[in-house]
Length: 276
Length: 293
Image 1 (cartoon, rainbow over the protein chains, first blue to last red):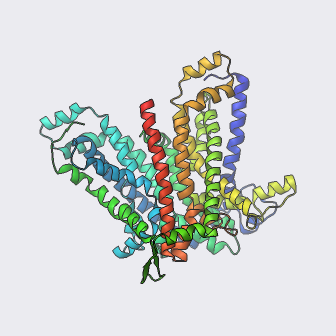
Image 2: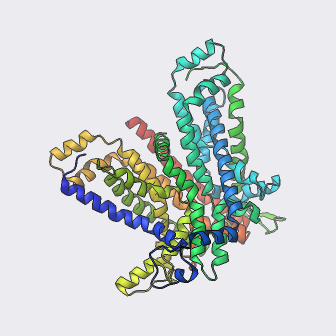
Image 3: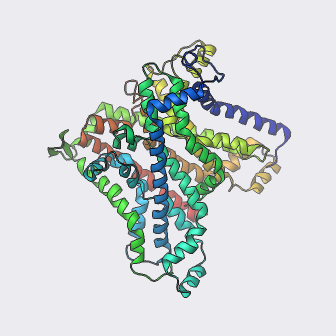
């Protein structure tokens, strides 16, 4: 829509005000992370950054063992995202290229049903199962239960349905088996979807809180999100917000940077997800 | 659908990884949740007594649980209404063909990458009773002091603000995607007919966005019920009193702290019923949408 000049000004003004409102908490988070201890307690609060960011980050890094936590989060998020992509590509391939094999709709229903079973619905038994497997406080527990993906399966299935049948016919006539067809034709076609799914799932696991909280018990296995809780607990007596916020910034940066760099891929992935 | 590769075993082989994970980590645990909800289990797990619907009648006669249910509904309702109204307006503004909109867009979608726990930390700082900037500004403007550590309604309000803020990115992303489907010609026709910006928004854009709104309604509900655990745990731990003890938080407390397994399992089942209703609604609606489109 073309807008008139007065309308333009209205739109810009409104958006600028709203931007300031929604960005202010993050600006203040940053300011707080740059203050020294005395400044962080000052009243009225200080709204201008100071110069202690690196110190605070070091302190948070040491205090919560951030290095290990960041590694654990990045490692499990990567593993889960990759596994979800592989598992859902295979499943989507099964659903789109093999006609009506027996049990197809049952399996499809099973995959969709994961949407209906968020963790709280099965919290205690899943935890018990981890105990039975001896997986409590391991990377297995942080990753394997997340490997199936209804979103991914739907995403790839939708894409595969748009691939012309003639391609598969040609492949078959040339004597290529289904796995070769998948690897050489479908996988290259799925790159955008794979990218979008990776970002979505990495973000999801990186930001997961409840499961790591109950399933990890030692400092070595904790993840970044729990690191914030550790910082809050260790600093809470004195409420050293400058240290807490320095840790918070570290915990939020990786998925945020990914989002900002790959914003376009992200948006594409989302608009496809919605059409399911 | 026609068979493109005649192979009897291949599809099962391809589905094996996903189905195995789903059976072991989704289906069996859910069935066990339902099963356990009919028993009373001793904290050490060594004795279990069949109590039928005993745990459920305990649930709905427990004032703590009913309170938690009511609090959750208030919380979820507010998150959905405030979030969707705010975000549809923002998205409509961002959708104007004006210079610099892509930068503005970034300002509104980035909270997608923020976790609920981090959103909780950020807003706990903003409303920190001693030196929080929002508390300070309000004191400056109204001379009123506020402390959400002992004001239960305020605590709930702040938790809602944090939750809406975190979900803003997601909502704006989907509304922007939805707005791509609103044809420019319709808006232009409306403006030729003399409809101003606000009228066009209400008469043309909003009705055409209703599929997106419905989708987001469901997603926000699920979010408010299931995904905000970290936010609550960081900000209030369910307090003050039980003011922000939403269902998932209560489930965690009863299951992992009080270790009342039957009671917690019954809570899982109630949540399951709730998700089922939402899913059926979504299914019905999306099918309609296919028919409609």
